[in-house]
Amino acid sequence: MPNETDAGFATADRQHWMGVLARAGACALRQYLADAPALPPHTVLRGPEVGLAMVRGRAGGGGAPFNLGEMTVTRCTVRAGGFAGHAYRAGRDTEAAELAARLDAALQDPALRPALQASVIAPLAGVESARRDALARRAAATKVDFFTMATMRS
Amino acid sequence: MAYVAVKGGERAIDNAHAWLAEARRGAAAVPELGVEQIAAQLGRAVERVMAEGSLYDRELAALAIKQAQGDLIEAAFLLRAYRTTLPRFAASLPVDTGSMRPLRRISAIFKDLPGGQVLGPTTDYTHRLLDFALLAEARPPAAPEAAASDAATPRVHDILGAEGLIEADAPGSAEPFDLTRAPLGFPAGRDARLQALARGDEGFLLALGYATQRGYGNTHPFVGEIRMGEVAVEIEPPELGFAIEIGDLALTECQMVTQFAGSKTEPPQFTRGYGLAFGQSERKAMAMALVDRSLRAEELGEDATAPSQNVEFVLSHCDNIEATGFVEHLKLPHYVDFQSELETVRRMRGERGA
Image (cartoon, rainbow over all chains, first blue to last red; front, side):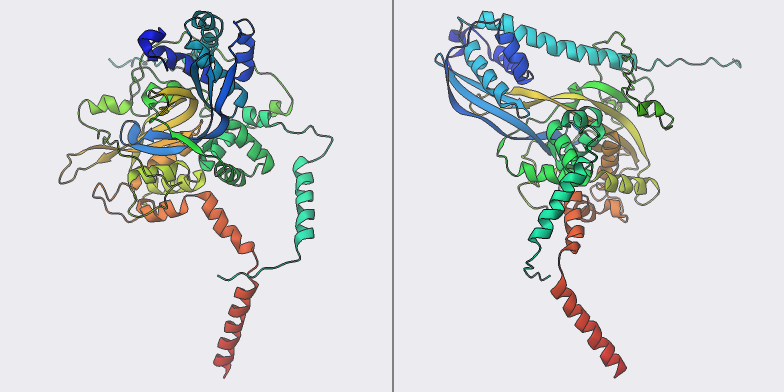
């Protein structure tokens, strides 16, 4: 991976787009890629392959770690345009993992990044954020508003 | 135990499997159940199978339920068997339940907790009357919405913790015990106990938790807090060298709070039991928290007299897949075993008669 100053993006930027891509299904990725510049040709270096991640929690919520249980994970690594692209995602969507790895490689390329950010990452982040907001609004509607009955004795 | 190879059952077994497949499908005139329908409409069953199968994958859990004809222990067994076919890529960073996006969050000890009491999609206030309207297909009206606030939702024990009235989480960053890689040994640390309880049978833990309430290892607990919602899972792949989010899990967390009279080293305070379960699994998380606290008896200098305080008893019997394996193996041929016992009984009777 080119170092960050040369690449023009920070680790946090890459963490953001990888997190967004991990949550998007193959259908959604294909849909937004349709309006984006074509992805460069790629070579698959690993996968896409399905495996497991052991999910850890903390005793008491904040204490020592413990193993809660496993989850399925799909990963893929590609090389495209001189960049190595990686994808790890919950579940078993191998097509999405390969597309996400190709996007991760392409997003490291300064020539492609702005267009892909605008046509793929931003709208996918918007979809996820709208989903979370809809859940939060439903939860907010079930928030209890206590009111205290004033007693007549005072 | 002795087993002998018994041949001759192949055709009968094949035919039994064919009948099983036909029975699973049911009457052809009724539409077949789709895995998507199970995943979407039988969510509590799916989550129980994920928890006890110790594998978070909604689609696979739904498939297992369909294959097992709704037998949830059999479905969990199928998930456990499937996981052995997959390599493990990573262990996650410990999930931060404090940053959960709560869909439900209640406390039975603080009415006015910061962030508020949020009921979420609960059955708590339903009247448990059968809803005959569900006999017909119907689309319910959309759930009401309200403006969501970004207010933080601190854990309840952090509120009491500020006064030192409740025990703090014991820090620790050691690599936790993993019972999928190493056999359980005793005494078992809290990491091993929590892992075993997290995949333990809900019914078994519920009964043990109930027993603690009724006086068998009494802990007189309060629900400090229950929260249910989505948490991001992060891993740190070595090829990247930094953490990335790989998705979200729905989790339920329960903090049980119990009065503690103090010991030689600890002042009187509240202690905590902890429950964490995949999905919207409140009963499981509560039962786990009760049993977790109960299993801390020895650590806290309490008399361990009840089964729920006996680590070896609880951990050796909470796994329903091990339990069902050992109970159901009794169906396998024991012809030779039984023949020898039969002869023993005959001999004893003969000796008594002589």
